[in-house]
Amino acid sequence: MKCTVCGSEMHRVASDLPFKTTDHTIVILKSLPLLQCENCTEYLIEDAVLRRVDEILAAVDGAAELEVIRYAA
Image (cartoon, rainbow, N blue to C red; front, side, top):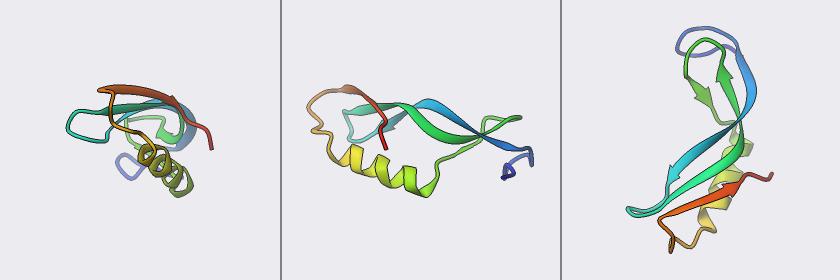
C-alpha cells in the first residue's frame, strides 16, 4: 500500500498510541498493529484493528487519568 501523503510504501509495524477517551482520561494502547510509512510519519489503522480498538476503549471505566493496555486481537 502507498502512503497517501508522500507516496512511499507503507509497512506493518507495532506501535504504542494514546487515545483520549474523556476530558480526563488517556488510554495508551501498546503494540497496536499499524501500517506506517517508511518515509514520513503517516500511519493507518486497518478497519478490523480499529473495531477492536473501539471495543477496548469502550470497556475502559474512566476512573484513572492514564491507563496502559496491551492490544490483543
